[in-house]
Amino acid sequence: MNDGDKKPKKNGLRFPFGGPQLPDPKKFGGWKFTIIYIVILIVGMSLFNYVFMNRVNPTIDFSEFKARIASGEIKRVELTDSYFTGYTTQRQLTQVPGLRSNLRAANVYRTVGILTEDFIRLLDSQGVGYYAVSREGSAILNIIFSWVLPIAIFFFIWRFLMKRLGNMGGNVLSVGQNRAVIVAEGDIVTRFSDVAGVDEAKEELVEVVDFLKNPKKYTDIGGKIPKGVLLVGPPGTGKTLLARAVAGEAGVAFFRMSGADFVEMFVGVGAARVRDLFKQARDKAPCIIFIDELDAIGKSRINNIAGGNDEREQTLNQLLVEMDGFDATSGLIILAATNRPDVLDPALLRPGRFDRQVLVDRPDLKGREAILSIHSKPVKLSPQVDLAAVARLTSGFVGADLANIVNEAALLAVRGGRTLVIQKDFEEAIEKTVAGLQKKNRIIKDDERRIVAFHETGHALIAAFTPGSDPVQKISIVPRGFGALGYTLQMPVEDRYLMTEDELLGKINVLLGGRAAEELVFGKISTGAANDLTKAADVARRMITDYGMSARFKNVALTQRGASMLGTHEQREPQFQREYSESTQQYIDEEMASMMETQYNIVKTMLSERRSLLDSIAAQLLEKETLDEHEFKAMVNI
Ligand code: ADP
Ligand code: MG
Ligand code: ZN
Image (tube, rainbow, N blue to C red; front, top):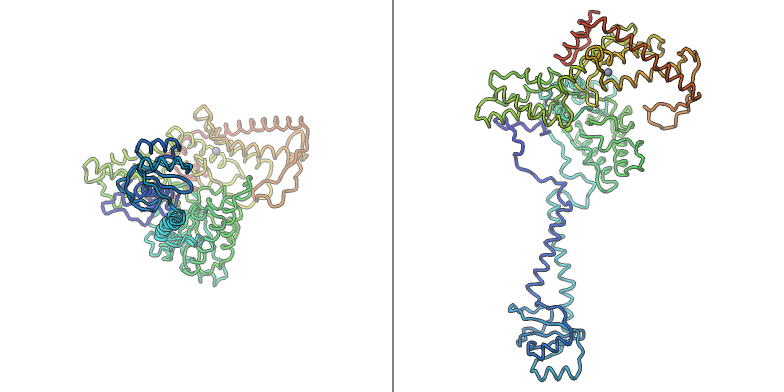
């Protein structure tokens, strides 16, 4: 379902389990496959044995053998150096041991005997025919049966397997070569108009399309075209779709690989594949390489305590080498997608590599409506269907969920015997999907949404009424991919290198605003402020220990900056060393607590004085889900 170019069938339905299932090439040659052939081999050999060999009873005692001769059961005896074989038929079918095509299978007894005169006498007295078989005579056939035949059987099976593998494209021996997976796709029909709800991401990618179309425009002026663009966002928000749309809009070839495709069992194969991919792409330029799920190969090498995974590391290194190696003017641009930007190796994000990051976030109300209308275009809707209402009911849903809902609604309409999809079908489809998503913790309940709305409004209002605070750019209660239920975005107006004590306290106030609003409105507090509190405590601690802003240790720095380890993570804080006693630590803790309490009370007063504003903005936020700078300013009236 993640193939953006696969247009739905004529009636606009996609059936959840429909369509011919092509075998996954990677599954072939897997070990299930091998086991089937081993079983066939064993069964075949047993059958062969059964049909062509005599039924040989297990070796019996020589005394029993003699008894069976005496009783007349054994009528013929074959003598060899190592054992005697007794047959219950008189007729000698063939002289050849091993292969006796007696289909009227005789009973055969075998024993390790002693050739004595007594024994010969017994044979003579019973009239048993006996003869000796020289080893020489059977040698050739023995060799054939014990050596040539099994080898021949294995050879044929091997040939057969090779042919199967051959059909899957490529030779087994050329592991490093990419198999059929890696052909460039031309004529991509996906366009930006097929993607909705991610306008900011689209805007940035429009520029990438322009790079691909008119690289000269940029290089003439001396500018550098970016080599890599990383699409970051939760699953199902349309990252893959956007990448295809870029290729479609620019009209260039599209190489798509998933990060997992590079990670192979053998060390070196992934790296060879990367090399191969870039070679093919350079020949086809201008084109786009799209690496889906980059985190599969791009995981940070630093956090790898257990010694690391050689294969993945080699693959990643090769990718870095290739990205540095190609000339951006050649019209090759690398797009990659990930939903785990936090685990990526920092080397990937350096200039000249994936230095552009595009956030593909969950759609807000308007975005969801637009996505719904894109996906219901091929579906016959009753005129009464209100997609805006559907959008209102699907807070937190991503594009893939919405596409699924439209399809589900259409299926429900068919099941209900209708020719048009009605609103109730949508409602039922939403209910079905919500149940599934709730299990995955992706849906926020209504009362939680209310808490989030007041929390974020609290941050925003304090920011608006704290002099010197960065202006609010956006408030949102659309859950952000990575754990946050909502967010308030503040943009610094200018670079700041110094902050006054008041400004630091203002920062703490803004951070506390979320929880204070919750307490004010609901009379209770939630866990939603945990991250805010950590940040606020961090600012407070630094004020006391680093900046000497406490009453007792005025102008005393209590920490000493340790030399930062060479080559550590860029984002990691330098190591701090504690330079004070236990009692000082206690003082710091107490001072922090009292600072927090003072600020929290200030914040609560600020908010309760503006209670009606808090209520109206939160209500607006609940309805629209996001408020931008202008909408917010208009409401606050500043
Ligand atoms: P991702 O790669 O981010 O996990 P996909 O691009 O594979 O998500 O999205 C899966 C499907 O969901 C797409 O093929 C498309 O049908 C639908 N979809 C997802 N996001 C959007 C969107 N923003 N606009 C329109 N359709 C979308
Ligand atoms: Mg994807
Ligand atoms: Zn908060």
